[in-house]
Amino acid sequence: EAQVTQNPRYLITVTGKKLTVTCSQNMNHEYMSWYRQDPGLGLRQIYYSMNVEVTDKGDVPEGYKVSRKEKRNFPLILESPSPNQTSLYFCASSYTSGANVLTFGAGSRLTVL
Amino acid sequence: DQQVKQNSPSLSVQEGRISILNCDYTNSMFDYFLWYKKYPAEGPTFLISISSIKDKNEDGRFTVFLNKSAKHLSLHIVPSQPGDSAVYFCAASEHNFNKFYFGSGTKLNVKP
Figure 1 (spheres, chains in turn blue, purple):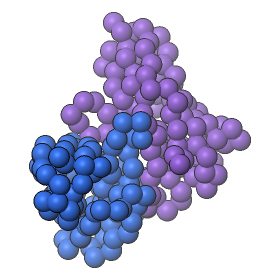
Figure 2 (cartoon, chains in turn brown, red):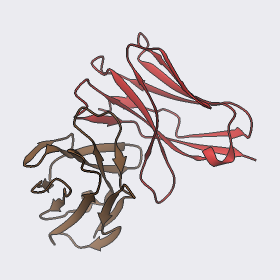
Figure 3 (cartoon, chains in turn orange, brown):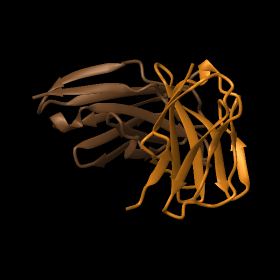
Figure 4 (cartoon, chains in turn cyan, orange):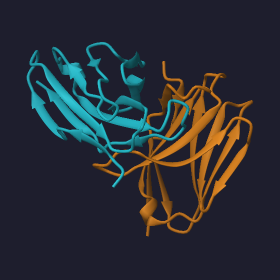
């Protein structure tokens, strides 16, 4: 089944403890992106990647890092999480950066205490 | 400042009637618009889209209308069904599709 898989789906952590949210897609998509969803703000783009080793900032990149060493994986790294990063995170992918339809993962709910 | 806005957080409609969800945008460089539907505990799924060269696109019960002069788009669902109950996000992109901007969502409740 074609899908975007995120892990963990739920995580409670403490301020400053580094964490990584993994994202993997099995559709051979070139383009991948991370979003966070917050009440009243919708989905805001954190980072995106147009292909392996090609990444760029979205609208809210502060406090996050990403890497794209393989086509299928696009992990989101929080080096020193803070409470304002408590959010619902979505990874998405599409065939190319010119494609207009994103396939989303099921989401990862992160709580930083 | 949000470039895509959905000013109605929720909408309740009777089954069989029309649902109209609205979306406004501020960036005149947007030339592609999409609607996504989201159920609880799932990721958003693509519903329908429209290019700025059109003013209407239809797919079964779903129709999206674009009014470029007003920077406004709307999603019509006719007839509405209880399975349509979900959160609907409006999204927009410039021509390169590298960055997508989403509204805050409208929660639609279709009552049987």
